[in-house]
Image (cartoon, rainbow, N blue to C red; front, side, top):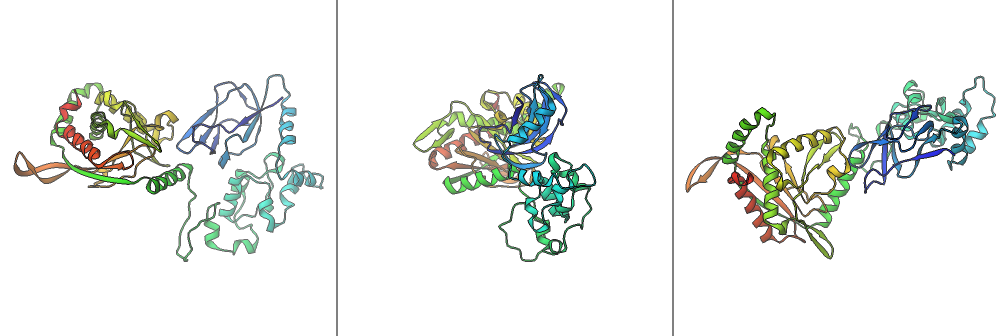
Length: 427
């Protein structure tokens, strides 16, 4: 019996995903462990490995298809003792698709070629939503102004796929469709809630990562009572220590950033003030015994927070090496779930953009996030005298349900002390 390959749940929170790319095609033989596809989850693009051995006899979901529910059959695999041709037919007979009746009725229609052209041409233009086409093909056709009813599909049973629409010439749409509205032609597949005031624009459909960011940040601001506490931190001693450490680590090819030292300081401050290393859970307040720091990284698909596990007990050189690796994987969309899920507190640094100070949104279920700005020369009192020093503003956002203002203030004081006396980071 052929084996259905289903959309996997690649993370505990994944309900649907985008089948970004197939790395196999019909007729390919796969072995257990072979990479079959790239799937975009709510956080990253991940590789999907084959579990069983056999021959790919059907691909049910085209690459580029969005919103594929977990558990949906995306391909069919024939085992070693099965006839690939028979296996390819079996799943289609059992598949509860709404279009087969159209396909079967259209198949006997006379045609000059053996290709199933009538299947694509049978639906009338006004019923374009009943054309047998992949979601990606429909979206491309809408953007190009191509009438799907005029295209012969090359996919299974005459299904119109991405390549068919890309090869079609624009302007083949019916006049009524092409003159409907410029904004409708450029709109994404999903309808927009935004009003159209006639201003030239372009709508871009949100990817899965941006949807999750929008949902979680809305949840955070609506359900978490934020309290913000800011301190100014003198950086001169930390910058001097960083220069000395980099000189000694240069033979090893390690170069510490200020952010690496701030990750360490945040972790040690959480250990010193455990009342801030917590998570609020309704009737439960969970206190963590180690500090796992989620670090905000700007990736092409959106913000993601890879985690430095047990940052309080790691050396700054180990933090630096690990952070560079995680940041690279984040930008490439290759993070594994265990590398970005969890964390006990977060660090967001916008200093490289010259931002002086900002208030970050808490990343639930965490109870705090530290936002740091740029270090800049400012008038500052040093040893009782006014002088010029390198000063950075740091703002902690705290979940007031879990963390009292006094405890948050104690944490900010501990962080300030560690940064201004940085030898404590090496102890």
